[in-house]
Length: 304
Image 1 (cartoon, rainbow, N blue to C red):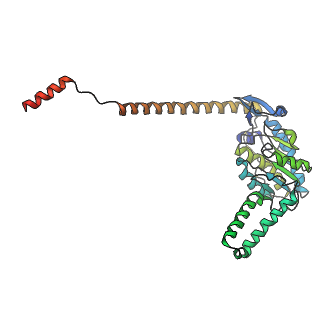
Image 2 (image 1 turned 90 degrees about the vertical axis):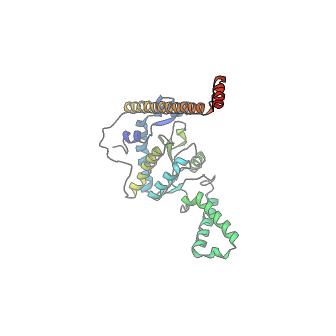
Image 3 (image 1 turned 135 degrees about the vertical axis):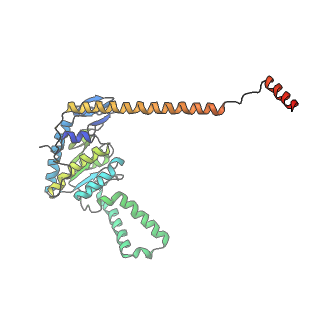
């Protein structure tokens, strides 16, 4: 049984790739078709890759391995933090600091500094410093917590790394590969799948797609720890679909978007026409008085 159904992936928008002019030729086998200038990802390959990645991640977690989730792009920041906290994993959802893995001793010194400041806050010894210095120390702690808060409890290098966008966080991928750490990740159509040990073809830009793919891999860790699954192996009463149904759905959605675009255009055109008409009415000059009207007014005044 697959960890997820194709219908679930379709509903989450996992099948949408990048524009056809922005693609990596090494992703050719994972592209099913091109519609409206956008590549459509073959969800059959996605399901197969998810099954392999799920099994590998579960095996790592069963051995007691710890996982680092990396997602610094805006769409992935909240999901990465929530899923990492749900499984008790580590995460980096802000800017990746160069050397986070390859120069981990230096990173550990900064983490110790963060812990030191937090202890100063708890004991109240920070109040022994001048006010200006207290402000600077707290700003330092805020910056350290922003970049290193998700790996504060990471005492050693992780046993696996999951990267949402290998193109965005390529330095993290290269550091992990240099240290022979298994790298899992979402491989969109503009990504080189050879960078990853366990590439998962899918959309790495949509929030729903990221949430489903990260949640499924995170469920492998949760299952190894005896927790409750939220995304993997969820039953679906609806009949299963194929890639032909996916293409039909893409065409229907494109037609619906085109209909909405035309409706908005017509409404804007009507509004512009009304505004031009109102402007012409307001700027129309007053009618000039004819000579006959002037004589009539003069004769009327004489009679009075």
